[in-house]
Structure formats: structure tokens, C-alpha cells
Image (cartoon, rainbow, N blue to C red):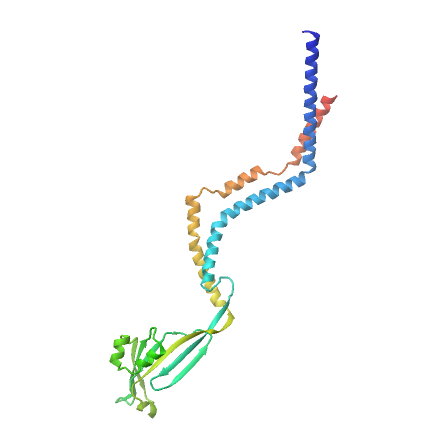
Length: 278
């Protein structure tokens, strides 16, 4: 081999060695920087890892949260919110009692009346029995959508005609009493109507009672439990989403920097670099 070729080969080897040493030096500097800024890097890695896991957790619970939210919205539209005692508007409720004898009586309250169905009562004439008691027939008819004027028109009807209009009585009883006033004994058959009205212009605001809210909350929990079966079925039968597998891949990808391992690698590279520099 000529001396020129030998010189070129030696120059090439020196150049390669120089590049190799430069790369080793660069690797050493990189390792030193990784170790130096390892706390900050690990903080970044943990932040990104926890963020990605949180996003997957949100993906896991989103269908169930959405279902619960929609059901809660439905309850709110109906006027009751679970877990919270609402401020509710209560309109004035009016009960009007009037009869074919010209008597009129009112009751007003902001709470609802119990059994607030419009009713018409027919009271028969008191008749004395052999046992000394007085008896009369009391029949009760349901009134549906009749105005007060129309109800007063019924007072002029005979009982048989009344049944043709309203149908059979809702109830019919024989009332007995051993102490009836002379005034009541002299009364002929008469009608009495009880009707209910809600005045939406007159109202107050009150907080929902604890018992009502507890019942609403229990109902909401039951309805939500049934409603959550739909997203559960879709997730288990129709979706390929695997939360545990996703979390496992995220943890594998975003592992924290192992400082002892990096320190050991740095020591080995420094020793190799110092040996080659001699």
C-alpha cells in the first residue's frame, strides 16, 4: 500500500474518532442536562400523564354523568330539584261553597286543599224514623269542567234529570241523626256545590319542605339508577373503550426519569470518554 493511501486511511480514522468523541461528549452533556433538570422534567411528565388519565376518566364517566344530568333537568322542568330544597311559588287556592238555599262560604289558603275535586251534593229532606232518629239521603256527584253559572243551573233540575246530566252519583249514603234542629227539619231537598279555584295573580314564595325534597331525591336516585342501565349496556356491549388498558398505555408511555439509571449511564460514558482521550 502506498504511503499516500496509508495517510488517507489514518486521516479518515482520526476524523471518525473525532466525530465519535464529539458525539460521546454531546451524549454526556445531554445526560448531565437530563439529570440537572430531572425534577422539572418529571413534573412535566406527571402533569401530562395525569391529564391524559383524567381525560380518559372523563370519557369513562361522561355517559353516566350526561344521563344523570338529563334526568335532573327533567325533574327541574317538573318543578322539583333533587338534593336541594327549591324556592317554590305557591298560588292562592280558593274553595267556594254555595247551595240552592243562597248560602255562600269561602276558604282561602296558599297550600293545596286535600281532595280538591269539584263536587255537587244532593241533600234529601229529613224524615223521622220509628226509632226516633231522623234520616236523609246524601248523594255526591263529580263536577267536570262546569262553570259556576252552569252549576247554579243544575240547582233547578230534578234529581232524576240531574243524574241524566252528571250520571250516577259518586256516592250515596243514608245519614242518621237523633238531634236535628227545627230549621233543618223544615228544609226541603237542596243542593250544595263545592268548587276550587287557583288565583295565579296572588302568590307567595316558600322553601320546599325537607320531607318533599327527600322523596324527590329518592325518586331521582331510583330513576337515575334505571336510566344508567342504557349507557352501561352500550359501553359493555357496543363500545371497544377499555379504560384500564388506556391507563396502562399512558403510564407506560409517560414514565418518570430514573435518575439512578441516568447517573450510572453518565459515569460509564465519562469513563469511556476519558479513556479514549488519553
